[in-house]
Length: 125
Image (cartoon, rainbow, N blue to C red):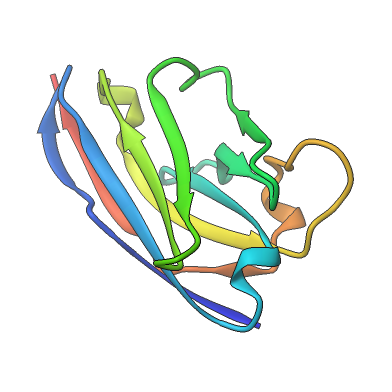
């Protein structure tokens, strides 16, 4: 099992940047697929970015070229660097983990078993 805790959310103007962090603890963190999701009220969780054990990365089209997912195995931390933020990026952002699968890491929330508590990102125009 793995426990996840996000940090780094906040308020920023459009065009600005934020970096989210997700501290992981528990067993075998480095053997999990890790991902970032976001949710706005009334909408389903949206997969933003995911990274596999060996570093394969999957981005949603809405953030490709603007967001970067990375992980520091020595620090047991997952990151999401968000640049060129837009008001439509406003959401609660969640870190998630799952046992590794086959192929590129999934962006479907239903495939992830472990979740953090979320951190709010607000982008103003």
